[in-house]
Length: 208
Image (cartoon, rainbow, N blue to C red; front, side, top):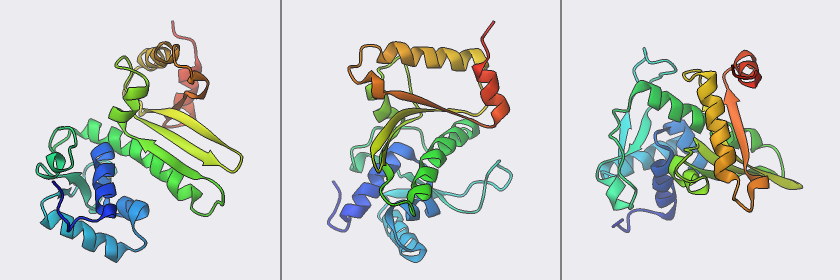
């Protein structure tokens, strides 16, 4: 059970990490704080309460930096009722994939800060997003983006070039089957994010 020392914002931060960990210090600042100093101080308090664990990526790791990445601690996870998952020692490909998916949604947040009347309203991680598709598909996330005169909802698939074109197309076909019986399937857009125009073009070509 969380103690009285944990604020409502803390609870929301811990829940966000349960869905999307790891997130960096600056990313948590973007989502929950108005200043870097307040963010760092609060994260330290949560770490001292044994709710968070920080990891510093190696400089040799692609995209690595000295900025901390934050995970729920082994104590913090059951404390908030989060499902168990592997410790911070994730494989590099898995970590990079999760970071790419989170980066897409965070870019939406940053891009909307100075745009009146729009913004990311909902961001679900893989486990919660899968509740909308069933076990046959595991999305990288689900988003609902509000516009001044409408909205866009989508399941996210990040293609980092580690899978064959056939496997990616099979996954997209699985989405169609999974959402076929959904009464709101007209709102179930599948957003495929590729690293570069050439890779996107290859995904468009028919498979042989």
